[in-house]
Structures are given as C-alpha cells and as structure tokens.
Image 1 (cartoon, helix red, strand yellow):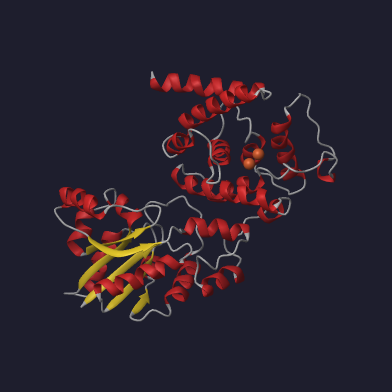
Image 2 (tube, protein in one colour):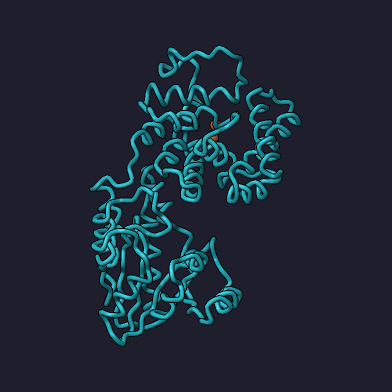
Length: 381
Ligand code: FE
Ligand code: FE
C-alpha cells in the first residue's frame, strides 16, 4: 500500500494545495492520501492562526472532491507543536508495511534541513517535492545537496504550482479582495460565513483610497505580511498598519476627519500625510495600538530607534512589488536579511534622491539616517 501524507497549517487551504495533491496522485498512484493540518507548525509558533477547527473544516471542504483522500485530525487532536517525525511514526504504526510518501512544497524543502529529526523522517517516508513559481528550485542541484547531507534522494514531482500562499490569501481576505483565483469556492464561502481573517479598521481605511492608491496599499500589505513572519511580528498589526499608512494621502486639508489636527513644526508637504494619517487612524477609525499608529506616523520620514513594525511598514512602502527604481534589488535583498541594515541603505538612498531632485529635506529623516549609520558602525565594530 502506498500512502501520501500532506501536512501544513492550511490557514487557509488554497487551490495549489489541492493541485499538489492531484499532481502527487498522478505521479505516485497512491492508494490513499492523508491531509494533515498541523496544530502548531514548528516554524510558525507566534503566528495568529484561524482556529484548529476552522482549518480542519476548510481542509475537508477543499479536499472533498478528491478520490482516496482523507483529512486527518490527528495532529489537531494531539495538540502542542506538530512534529512531522512523530506523525510519521504514528502512521507507520497504524499502517504497517505501507510505503509512506511525505509531500512538501519546494519552499519547505529549503527548510527541511532545519526540521527536527530529518533523518527519522527519511527513514519512515520518502520525500516528494512539488515546485512553486516564484520560489522555484533546480531539482538536480538540490538533489546533490540533499544527497550529500542525507545519503538519500527525494522524488521531484513534475508540477509547478502558481505562486500563491496562505499568507497572501489572508491579506486578500482582510482587504475584501476577490479570492476566487486562489481558493476553492467552498473555502471562500466558509471564510466569508465565519468572518475569518478580518481585521478591524482595515475596510474603513480602504474606503478612503482611490483605486491606484489601494493597489499600492495592497502591495505594501502583502510585502509587510510576508516579512512579518520572518521578523516575528504579529501579522495582523502589519496588515492593519499597511492598510492605514496612506489613509490621508489624498485627503483635503479641510476634511472633517482632520478637524482638530495641528502640528507645531513645519513639515514638508510629501511627509505631512504620515501625521494626518495617524490622526485619522486614531480619531476617525478608532485605532488605539500605539505601535500601529507610530508605524503610520513615521512611514515616510523614518525616525531614530524605530520599532520593528515601524521599520517593516517604512520598508514595505518603499519596496512593494510595483515600486521600481535604480538599486531597488539591492534594497530588497537587504530587506530579506536585516531590518537595520536595510533602514540604513534605504534612508541613504532616500536622502541622496531628495538632494538630487532638489526636494525639501526633513530634519527627522537626517536624524534617522544618522542613527542607523551609527548603529551599523557599532554592530560592525
Ligand atoms: Fe505614504
Ligand atoms: Fe505609501
């Protein structure tokens, strides 16, 4: 008997999860596929997730039409951190003599080396890997690396999934965007009926934006959510701050939302909307999280000693996918590596650009630049 096991947080399950299972069935002709939602995935311990029950229900809906496929509540019932080697040990005992395959996406294969007890996993199951657009790996080079480490090969499945992720689906759901290209219809209905992934304040913020500004804002939110996991920041705050950051960008000075707004210092016009935006967020939209408000308040100028959320929004605003300027690739690489280093290069870039264009330079930006320059010197000795 051949059994394919497919684990994940499924938060939410998306169309490529289903396609991967279909591709694995095609390639491996298993007798059974077991889809296994994790209680707490080892790499995502501080992420806000939909409840285990909701994730299980969504997985059941998504895989209902796939033959010989069952969704197991084993890890959800076990609770705690869901380690693959333990789950495979359990299945090995339950189906003695069966050939087990553990199905993963290429993004997971990169992490596999850091999983708990990878050798145990490989003694219990063969690894079957599916590629993904945007995150594609070269199978032959990866096989060499894999073999060098484990003296085993993995099975490469000839299917390349589209570049969609559950993180992206959560952002789109929070923004009220169309989920049809990404999720099974029944899952979309479930998300809507149960109001999953909604974030208070996001829709209110978006109602102020023109379509082009909304598109940029969505890019900022997708970027911020992607890096929130890496820098261990609450994803909901990242999405909320992104949704809010340009809320007052096109607001006239005499808008009722700005009555009572005052600022003592002289602020260059392109910077002013960070302060008016934070004001609207607080006074009209009722946002009271100081870190979120500060992420809006300093997203254009930066400032010394920013919180990680402030840096995340500043950098996501500058580097979201629709941005394009000379040197952006270097900045994007730095974003994936180190927030402080990226702040330093970004502020340096911004000041240089402002000087060249003859734009007014806001003293706080200079202070921020000097702060991150000094910090860099200290860290690099
Ligand atoms: Fe802005
Ligand atoms: Fe912006």
